[in-house]
Image 1 (tube, rainbow, N blue to C red):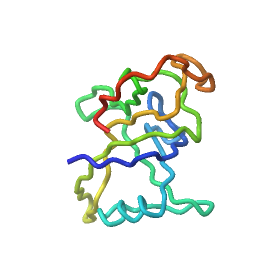
Image 2 (image 1 turned 60 degrees about the horizontal axis):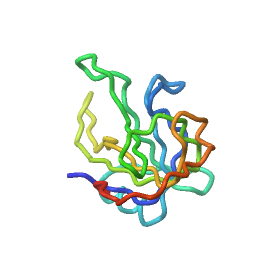
Image 3 (image 1 turned 90 degrees about the horizontal axis):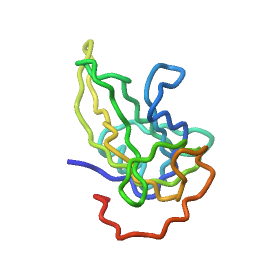
Image 4 (image 1 turned 90 degrees about the vertical axis):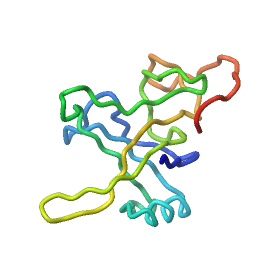
Length: 141
């Protein structure tokens, strides 16, 4: 079952290339209520500079060697291929899972997809706003 974080700020988005640690990454800035909900699911929320954050991380490849993705979609439902700057607002869909490794166990979160709430223009630095007319919202969010 999927969970949705509504209207969160994203930062350090490495959805189509790896970060300095060799991972795909999306960090979300959470409200106190959203942080409490994630903690109630067993996830560990960090506090940084007085703000609550959670980082979704993925290996760039699956165990089978296929490319992993962290897809972002615009308000039209099209996959977004531009730069996503820090501070962009999104709805983020994720699911939780249990893990166990080397005698330790816990709960992890799997990033499924995100819907951009800010109008960014694809194929740009992300700072040019999309002026297309608003269409009907048929997203899963």
